[in-house]
Length: 504
Image (cartoon, rainbow, N blue to C red; front, side, top):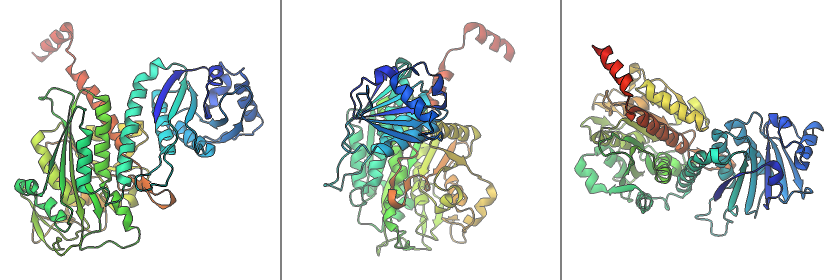
């Protein structure tokens, strides 16, 4: 889908040929400079006559309005014009329009902020996305172009570029997470990662079982040994800064299907376990966006992929394995497998000497119980990193919530037969999972863990992947690039001299 940003007044918007026009109508619209146009007067009359409610997302449809080129018009209340209100309004308008075979959409947003523009693009893409990879008779998305009319297009070009890149990354993540497990095996996911690098500023290396065994990733190997599908460890490198610049390392859990292993999951809804590679999809989707925007920082992506199957060779409850760190792990539950592949990837990440290390995983059902489907769980050993991630999530409507990491939570991970067990008891299950991962991160390393089990997919009638938290990760990386650029700006001579005198 192509997005175009145009400087348009409301009278000009009426002359644009389109299949449909969405007219965002914020609470402040009554004072709008275009309020005397026929279209604006129709909208104001609808508001005055209470033909449309005041609540954000209320929609009034019209067909063949005189003087308007677009065949359908959707007037939608957008409240204070905030990103959250804009997103809700666009989703409501798209649902009401039922665009069907429409190819051209005009969305008039007027005085829209950069954040609201990003929310607008994401909502439009979300509402028009359709999965067709294994549905040959299904209709693909017909919407080809979306023109966004604003007061000042030039002022929003940078925001448009970022939003478009984010949409691409989110849709890539959704597409691969939605694919059936026999169409998104570790091998196929690795091949997709290799294709991402073609013609882009990306390097991709793929390690197989022999290379992983040679490294000594015993925990990762233990999870994969019950499957006939060979594991694939994907290493991506994006270089936007000098080689000497420490990278941000993203680690994504890539369990392409999770039966639970010998600790078998219940049958109902087990099909949703194809989404257990949501962390991997999000990391790869973030690299899609990075390749588009090419910010000035270095980023490493580590994506351990495998299946968790109950074969005769599968790891058993009570087995003890040795991780890449040298620490031994008693596997009390084979369904706590994500932390086993992540712990070896976190140890591997240390070789890159990261400025920040962030892992992303559909890790625990306990996090869903704690936070539901709105916010991801955030764990971090650094306040500054946690605050940066939370701010990025809030800015992109991809929110997370910081959870505790008290040392006392480690008590449940004690084992009589190994350095640690891979699970603790039921209480605070997402916290103890994070404490397990923390054991594989050096204390001096800035680290964060995002448990996305509640936000990576939707169940029920709207079952499917969400693409989260690509938007959060991308915003954090762009913010980090901006911080790095600010740190590298030379201090003015007078200020430098004053700072030098102050040290004496």
